[in-house]
Amino acid sequence: MPSILTEIGFITDRSEEDYMNSQGGQQQIASDLLQAIIKYKTLLDAGHVH
Image (cartoon, rainbow, N blue to C red; front, top):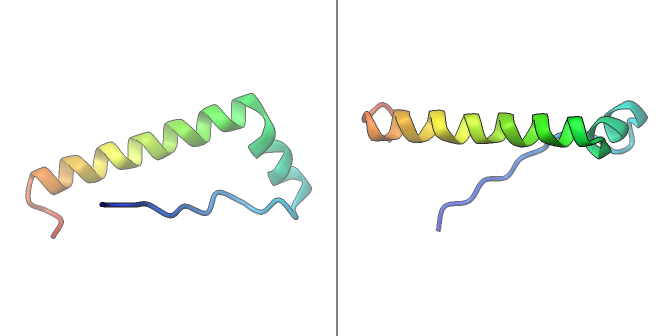
């Protein structure tokens, strides 16, 4: 089963914690993660990743 470990930010940094807890921040983080997964899958299907 494939898995992904991400480190989004540090909750000890108040500004990062606020961003990660905000709806806009969560939407942006989720969107960026989705785009990265799509890009990886595209490269994998094209044979550019082993």
